[in-house]
Image (tube, rainbow, N blue to C red; front, side, top):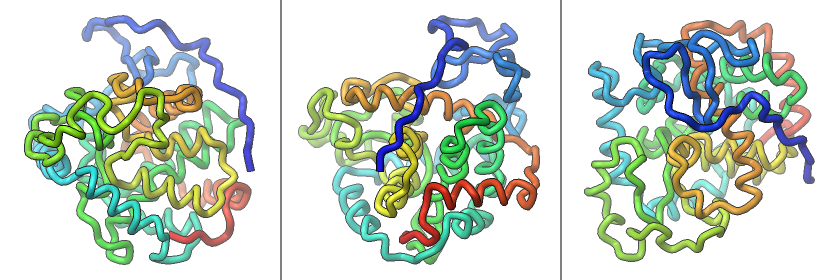
Length: 316
């Protein structure tokens, strides 16, 4: 089933420009420029610092949390190879682990903390609801986007024993393409020197095994929760629009939607869907805070969206 959705209005977007660090503005992912305390439209409030009192996505700040994050990326960059991802997609694409509802999966995330995230150490269910409620406030008529925010990180259940107890480096963190050169914009790029694919002549050119304009759907991405949740949603017949699946699959692909590289691999559908990913990313990143969500209060609304776009039970 195909759902047509109206493309977002970009009246609030501005031309890319360099803004001095001492101004009272932030440049959000996707080119959004907003005051440090309030968004352009007076809706979603953007905090100036993360839960640890530091700038968002600062991978160089000195702290015990940052040391954990850097070690995570060292191991991830060494082990995520083209052949490894092919094997994982084949294994988990069978969706033979368990049958459960979307909300049941949300509740499982109460036991998950993401070691790759320098901005947050709260259980993931808090982040899901923070993101969804922030988007719901500013885009009240786009219920598919609210649900996308709720489920975008559900693939992190791969960390749990019933899903294989995968290591953090195989589940979370920024994602990137395999089968072509690792761009220097990828966080902690230096650790790719120990990745076997770096010395493979098939994989170490700009386009590698791909043709320009091939479409991201044909690109092998590093394995993790993004790709897994995309497979779960698609194979279980969700009626969410293609933009939602794009957001789920590529929301951690910061080299693309923040640094603007690998764009030569995109096709026209990717470029259209990118508009929504840039909107989503603002909320995914900057909604991380210590503000608590009343789960029971918002639960009925999200249950109604789940029933609208998903079957009662899904194969995982």
